[in-house]
Image 1 (cartoon, rainbow, N blue to C red):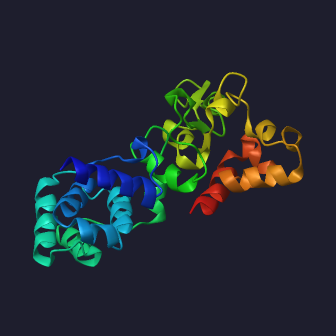
Image 2: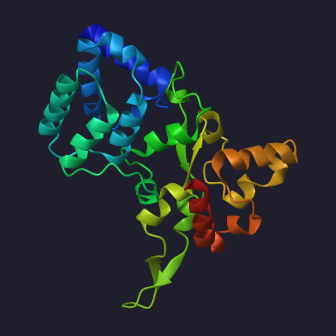
Amino acid sequence: IAAAIKAVRDFVVSKTYIRSDKALPSYLALIPLIYYRYHYPQKFASAMGLHEYLLRSLVTGVFGGSPDNLIDKIVRNIQEHQDFVPSEIFGVIRADNRNLEITPDIIFEQHYGSRTIHLFLNLWYQDFDYKPALDANGPQIDHIFPQSLLKTVKDVNPDSGKLNILHYRAEQRDQIADCMLLTAEENGFGGKCDIPPDKWFDESRFANKEDQIRYFELHLIPPDSESWKLENFDRFLEVRKILIA
């Protein structure tokens, strides 16, 4: 059993984009793979589509709620076919009234602090070192438009007439379209912190124009500098959502 668990761990690290425990919102999706590797090690070594099963089941959260019966059904399907057939497994999951469709809506449900945001960031930022020797040196999620900046935008309170109602609620400030992944050095002391995007993305911070373009491509940043201004926050989000999708 230990060998099967280790083999599945090595499969995840070497055959999928998942490189961090943070990117596994649930270990339950691994149980059928461990069962399959334990009983059919030779077939496991050459099986196709295991990574797609893992991606779809984790992204769509099919093992949420009451997963025990679903796991039993998947195991029985593996027993029947004496193999892990992704199309058959997907059929079992759908027959259990669970959705496997990956849509843009699922992406945009992610937010700063959500359990599954690192799953998406592992796919997005494939060149980041997610497992440094020192945990504190791992990549960090940061707000592009700082929280402190967005909280300065206020609306008039209809009851008091005072300008004291936050214009941007937490769900707007924390959405994935306002998040980027930074290295610990970038986000540390003397790093981005509360620097607004119109200063953080300014060309003066880069050695040359090519470096700036590569940075924008990595982080999916709209190149229109006008969208980096606070008054254009909503426009920035809409354009960036298109790039992310």
